[in-house]
Each structure stands twice: as structure tokens, then as C-alpha cells.
Image (cartoon, one colour):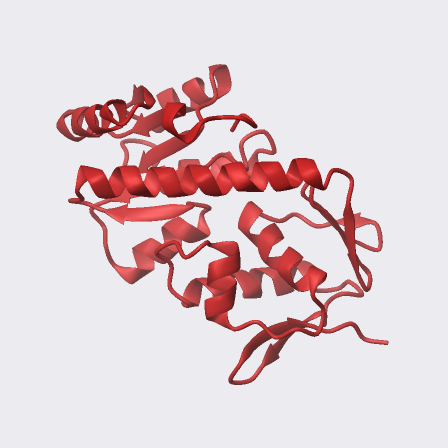
Length: 241
């Protein structure tokens, strides 16, 4: 997303295979002042992203061919698009489906049917959050956070243990950064949801899943015991002497 994008004038890419729903969403976004582009499948959406990157993607969970979740995973595996804001739209409202979408990298998850006003409010919330993050990144260019053998650079989104780079998603990086900035402080799951997911519609199980992934990333390094569970309270970073 461009650094100075106005929330009210952002470009929204709608990826939805059902024409009536695509038209309804497009109308609601245009009425709210957004520039809109549409794609009916992941292949066409990828072409749009490569040629004229949007500021936010509204992505249907189920798409013909490559599913929305699969495409989202590819987006977030590419350094050029890993920080592209994505809101997932779906008729699949089960907890497991929500967790799968959010773990793939979605910033929010809206279950159909939904009211246009709710959709616009969610879009505004995600865009504001990314604008705030962009400003913070500019304010902290080349600032490194060191926590034991772990070094993190907020501007470049790089995390290293003893100079060896970790492969982290955007959410995993933000979660690890919370602990790196405040070693020994205990964070409850609720606190982490507020800090990393900004109170998006995510349940506490998502925190546990991301913590498990972080620990797997740290296995075999000098930071493998950095993240600790504090029974009954939450998690903390502990620097061993």
C-alpha cells in the first residue's frame, strides 16, 4: 500500500466469482469513495496485483481453480506482496474455516451475508491500521531491536538469529516483535490480539497457532527457548544467561 494513501480514496481489488455479489460489493465500495477493480478468479487477480497493485483486496474464500486461501498463501509468500492488506469474504462461517483464512494471512474475515455498512467499516479499519504501521516504519527506519541472539529490523521486516534469517509471515513478525521489545513481560492472549490483530474478529486460538509456528522457526537456534508459556497467564520472551 502506498505510504500516503487516503483511507477514502484507496484502490480496492474485489476477487469474487459470483457476478451479483461482485456487483453489490463494487457498488458499495464505489459509493464509499473507493476506486474499484474486479476479478473473478485468482489468475486475473494476480495479473491486477502485478500490473497495478491495489491498496486492499477483498477476497472470496471459494474461487474456481485456485481457491482464495491458496492464492492468499502465495501472495504472502512473495516479498513484493506479503504485506498487502486482505479481507476474506466467505459463506463458510465455521471456526476452522476462519482460523484457516486468518492463518493464511487475512487481516479480517467477514461471513456472508453482510451489510454494506459493516464491510465499509471493516475496510476503513484495516486501511487505517496499515497507514499507522507505514508511518511507524518510516519513523523507525534502520532501527533494530535486539533480544538475546534475536535481532529484528522493523523497517525491513527482517528477523535474524545469530545472523541467520528467519522466514516469517507479517503476523508472525509482528507477534515476535512484541516479545522482542519487552523481554520478560507476560502477555495474555487477549493483549496479543489487541496488539497484533488490532481487535479484528479473531479468537484466542489463533494466537496459539502463531506461537507454535514461531517456536518451530526458532528450533535448532540459540533462540529456541526464547518464547515461554506462563501457565494460566499467557506468553513471554525470556533471555537465558
